[in-house]
Length: 191
Image (tube, rainbow, N blue to C red; front, side, top):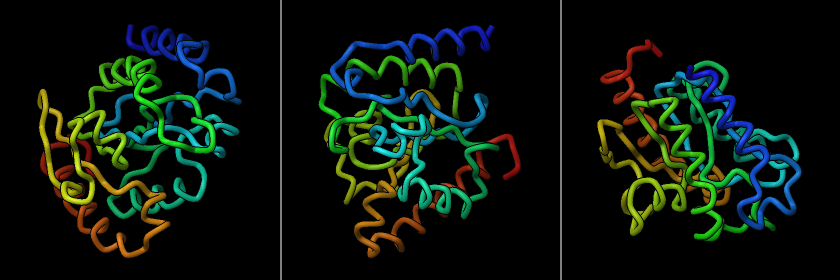
């Protein structure tokens, strides 16, 4: 049943025309990873490389994300699912606008419902504001745990922000160690 629901959701998303982002996209960037992952990473939206390849986080920021995940024994092919708030690239890699987020958030909610993760990692301010709380302050609240409906949530600096400001690396490493500890506490798989 879940495979059917997953396939139907993906097909609906791939043919979506609910907002202006659909007009310029090369690919819908639905998500990647095992559908039973206990950890879900959520970014804001695809960039140029993601739009061209149809997979989230494949540019320089994606390479850094893969390295960050590797530090805590996570891998997009093995045990973490990666998705975005919006599934189509905003022009010029700008932040997705509120109406674009609203048009697309149903797909992400459905993904969360099918995956049923135990941990959600919001990658950056936009994802944290949409998933954790609208007034979320990434500089003050990254690395803090929040819980809703039994799901543990934390925001990390977006990998692109860490690339732009290498001074964020030490804080990000500390946050990743907190994630690793929480995974060990609550997840069924040994990572």
